[in-house]
Image 1 (spheres, rainbow, N blue to C red):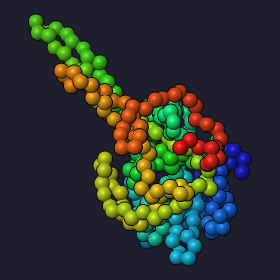
Image 2 (image 1 turned 135 degrees about the vertical axis):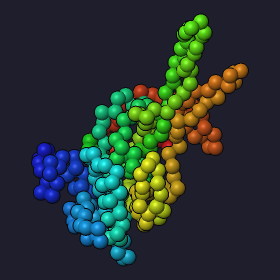
Image 3 (image 1 turned 90 degrees about the vertical axis):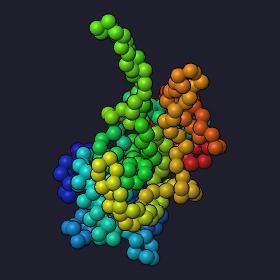
Image 4 (image 1 turned 90 degrees about the horizontal axis):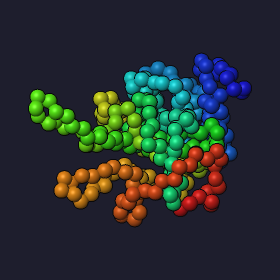
Length: 280
């Protein structure tokens, strides 16, 4: 389909969205698995049209991939996710990666990139909190990135002034930004490295919105432990002073210890590296 073409099922569907659906379907069919593109899924809450619907061999387990490139409100996300669960279908939400990310840095010795100030759309925050991570489809590499959001800590410079003969002061502290998040990206990985797995989730509430419970799904990489989490974070680094001052930094877990990460300014790669060539 030409760039800018309109899908018959989705008004003004972008070429990235169409390409993502075709790439996911091709990757799974190449492994001999059954999948459908743009297929209706009937539920008690109405019909849903899955971008890509995967069929697990043997037991009838189905996973819908929802490639997302435009804004959705919390109610719509909750309703669509609940509709899939009501139909006995797990869903994985897959945002499309936009590479206008400012100036990313690579954490030395890893394949993880760091974006210090990422303006995460609210719908991405919702998906991150549901799935525990984000899997971005990259239309340039035609692969995926694992994404993790963390707090963005900003420092308020100290100020002082005199008023009515008294000296006043403010600032000199760290605070979590309401506008920005820190974004960690690991990859890019080939779609052939992805496996869909079942995840049992309890209904819960966070940030004032709700997450439906049930048998959901998430991606896992081939030969990777099911409980893997990215070994990076934004952490406090104490400095021994009388005031107990500390600062926040990017940290990388080495063994059981968290150490300050060494950052190297570097653009995101435009190709998926072979698995054997990745840094360990």
